[in-house]
Amino acid sequence: MVDSDSNPQPGQIVLIKRGRDAGQYAIIIRLMDERFVLLADGDKKKFDHPKKKNIQHLQLLNYISPEVQSSLKETGRVTNGKLRFALAKYVNEFVYDMKKGESFNGERRCN
Image (cartoon, rainbow, N blue to C red; front, side, top):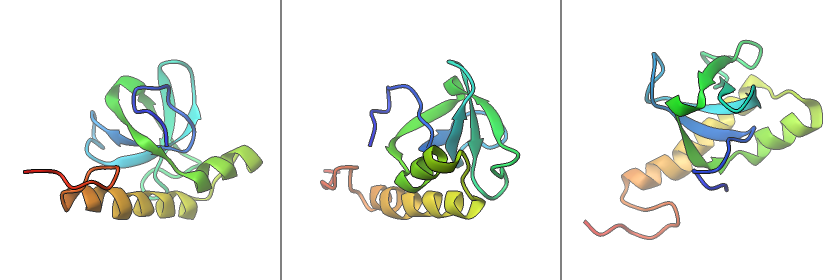
């Protein structure tokens, strides 16, 4: 896990806030500079053709995929299947729980 206010890291899941893909999740696969990152989701944006995105147009989420991060460190690459798996795992574990009324640390929200 990582603080959402910190610098972006490879393997970190983000929510796109601006542009054509707004509302979709993606994974940072490379940092370009202090302002831009490359994103891929393994589906529409493959690892070989990532999307260059301004960091200000992203919501950095408090989750780094260990599978993606280790693959990027070891080989400098990650399979599109692994990207899809990591995003599906995040959505199933965290987004689904948030919709059920739980916070990220597993406590119930009071309505």
